[in-house]
Length: 118
Image (spheres, rainbow, N blue to C red):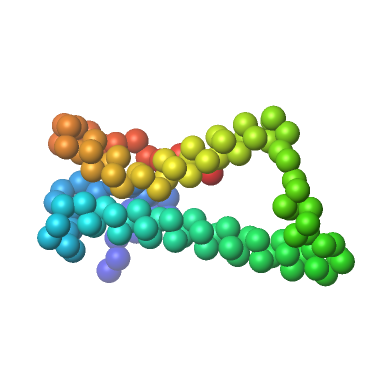
């Protein structure tokens, strides 16, 4: 009979795993590099899908975007907002390396902070 005292939907997910981390490659850093590449691939797919949706909507409305996009200049406020988002992107991509470095100096009971969500 299942234990109904713990609701998995109300249990928060952990952002890191305690204990021995699984290794797939013998060379130091290769697992982390693969994790970074996978993070980049996820981020890139989101952008590609969003861009495809925007281009589709624009085409349905008869809007020609390529020339407008090439000549666009952001305002200072837009540039500042994009720079902040870029820093979040970089933090998410390199989370694996940061987590690894922090785990080397952290006490066993400490857990590194979770990455901020966009």
